[in-house]
Image (cartoon, rainbow, N blue to C red):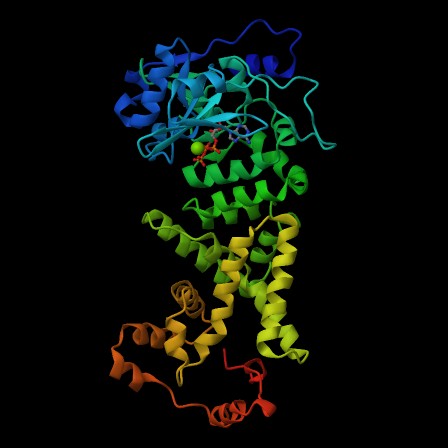
Length: 450
Ligand code: ATP
Ligand code: MG
């Protein structure tokens, strides 16, 4: 009943019978007392309310608290304008050009404060596929709720009254473990195709089922992701991969047909039988780290995801007679160039990926002085973790990984004893290398058994 009413409101302004009335759920029912809200976001709401504005904790934090999950951060929505918010807090600044939001610092905490957004007018600027390009009108509380993606994300918590304000039956949907789109799913995906990825990520992360109405159109609309700017796609992929539920997310993306031909990264991950085991291990490893509260580095993650693609190119180039290390450099560029078209892997992350990959052939060298210089490399740790992953996947002998584990922990004499004898050809080559005229580049050495 309520839902029908809401979709009527959303589908046309003409017969709009006035603003919808939300359910106001008391603490006795929802169970979230104000001490569960971060001190900073509570303070932001109080200050704005004292100045006569409406202000609520909104979105993911309310949803997560209702599910008993620790929120990542606390966002605030208000009817105060960005300028009013900025004036209300000494340590605050307005960011964003398209839709201004305010970052307020409270101690160590940064709170994102957003002014209620208005309904998308018929004149909203869109691209030729219907993706909304500009979205910067302020609106009422009800309009703000209607502009959010899922009912579970459109919940507002008032710390003063300890109530949850629910315009779209979000609390009920959460109880039923359902992720339901607000409004008509197809048009909401058209407005912003990233919502398809958000649906998969949130469902996987929170153990929710995507409502069939919202799930059905995903397969046919998947190609709309092609028009999403690369940087936005990259951000969303990173969120997904570092959600602590990457394995589940990736599996579900495949089930929804969201990987095919759209995100080269996912094609790569899921359609290389050799790489799949490695990637799944890497993701499980990342999930574990996230759950233990350890950091994850995007460089390491993408190095793992793209490794088998790089390996394939590398092997091909070597087979065509290219020397080992130049071949690896070429292979890296080939892989990263393809990804760059769709995913804006930043320069820094690309540099991290290359560092990790370039260290790999060096782990084969366990004689002479080389192991000593390798462990002094600034990126040794990441390279070594990557080696462990390769060993776990069966791509490198476990004995090699174990050797490096022991070598790092050994003292001087023990290390010296561990060194392998120089390969027969190696000494000769070294001697030759000393004479500049006949120097042989390291890259010309035969590929070590990997
Ligand atoms: P997370 O746990 O990843 O932070 P979240 O739902 O809080 O999940 P955010 O990206 O922090 O995700 O967004 C905050 C809120 O903004 C959401 O809960 C939702 O209400 C709204 N929102 C975010 N992205 C969209 C979108 N693409 N379309 C509509 N509403 C959105
Ligand atoms: Mg959030």
